Length: 455
Ligand code: PLP
Image (tube, rainbow, N blue to C red; front, top):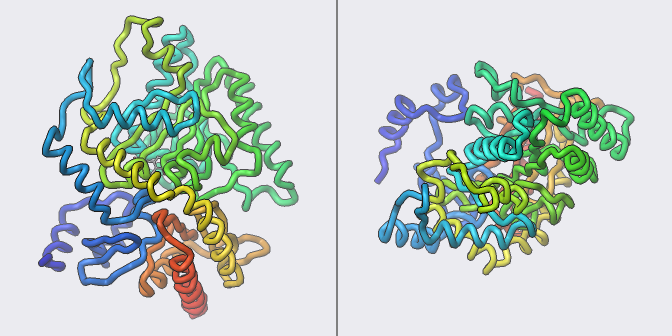
């Protein structure tokens, strides 16, 4: 059996956790999650929780899928690793690339592998720069991103990230990145209609291009729905209009579908199916392997590939990549994950249960702190406020997101606190019964939170 106290001590003394408040951590230590099954995870003391965050937006097919474990074990035993540099390849990497080309929008037929979302975004920007260099347009370097975007924490991805607090104490590559306003329908300027707000954001893009010069801008990168930034919803038509402006100026449109991809919005990719955009590049990770193994992928259009690597442009080595690009065990996990998603109709389940989850969460709006319930399908957030009319926030010290999450956890549900928000991003296998249980727990958690804030 696992020794909780000994593990806690080792963890506390030696494991530097990402995104963790050291002051809280040293007082409270960590929750050791040691078992999992379907929609549940279990801690070292045997407490069982409904997983309301799919690990970290990623365990899309749910926990404990033995057939994914088996596929990984078979691949690891047969050939765990060999290089994919030069002309070497492996069977799962080739199979998966073809499968991704089949699932992606029509012209995205080429895959560059990395080890996760940050690395995928990082590699993408290098590929974009290489592309414009090959085209003889070396000045096209700058990347447009957005405030409150989350694109990861490798050096370049962190610079794309627009969540200010994430970059406190770090340097960013400001000569390469310009941030536009985020698209945040809930907190749009007072008195602006949704359509006017959309026009306002598109005008900002046009003005920025005018100011910097299209000849200096390589790409615009956007999450279809901003995730870690607070599940921020764009006004209707925003992405398609932003893309049209980009296209008119030879600015590549990169969709970061690390969260929205692989079923979370009811489709393998949301860009075209939900947002009516045809990105030049789509990045994915997380749900691609349902978190069973680290993996990221950059899907590249025929048009870009033509410049990067086809015989017509022969000469030149694409000198970028990772030891683990196309790792056979990760690719085997992803192939099995996709097979399960297709066999079980997981995207169809989300198209059916997603709107129900949205509707039921909205029934929590009567609680005193619940200012906004938003998102789409299995990507949702609740924004807590002090005052619903003015949307004024509670003081940071109230730690309202933490309080709600703690009350939920006491009642057997893990959701994610992010400042004053609570994020809900479940495994994609919840049915209506689970939704009802979860909403009942949240109802109690918000009641308890309101009471504790009054004390
Ligand atoms: N892009 C988006 C939209 C994300 O949400 C994340 C992680 O949450 C990343 C990129 C970074 O992915 P990773 O943590 O796998 O590097």
